Length: 143
Image: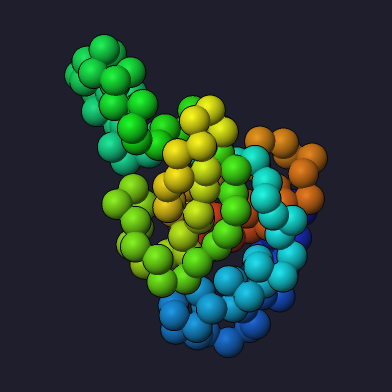
């Protein structure tokens, strides 16, 4: 419970105590993250990306999934997070209205724009872990 209280305090430190519009909240998160994240850093998906669901928990073909993962981002991939953008477009993001992560897949250097709330650092000991986790918790639960 203490960890949740501390996280809520960190989120309020970014956004303030008054209710603000989503666009203003995203601007504050963007400024906060850009000024504190040590980039580039290695990230991966928190859970399967939207396009993968039919293959991971549905009836999709394993062979087709393996083939598609060559050209599409997978939550199992390791990416290098290189930048965060407010107004970028992404065909892979589950939520169009969120901050976007500019990433490069480590295995083949293919670049993607993903939803930032769908990513976590590879290492929980990374100084970036808490920053990305705080944003994801806010985005999923409080927006």
